[in-house]
Image (tube, rainbow, N blue to C red; front, top):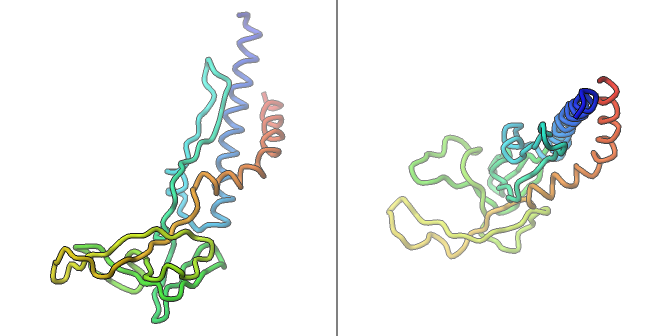
Length: 182
């Protein structure tokens, strides 16, 4: 391989890596616009693969996990729980409650996990997963209630995929800009 070919290869790799970095940042910002997740949480669910010396491929992979509604800010009232999904957007879940795990104390009406006893509760697009809660006050192994339901979002990879579709066209122009810098 001649020096010219090595330089072209290096320039392309550098432009590709800068492009994937900018696209990953924009994807995180688009996700945060719709879901008020902390940046650290989004980074932990996203893996950026950069181009290497021997491989000119860069990609963003997202985990296929469903996020719990406990990742969002919640406030319990007498009628239910208000969840702040994004800036200026909150949802009210009637009949939902915040509970605490064994060994923890409920400091205020904002801490604990969120659940509901009603399978037909209004979910606002969230999915319900079934479980049970054990009483730790008298510590009996029998469940406190027959069933409770936890709220979960759709898979994070699907949330990110919706945002990626808008970035695909933009990624080409970003790559062209970055390649022109070399």
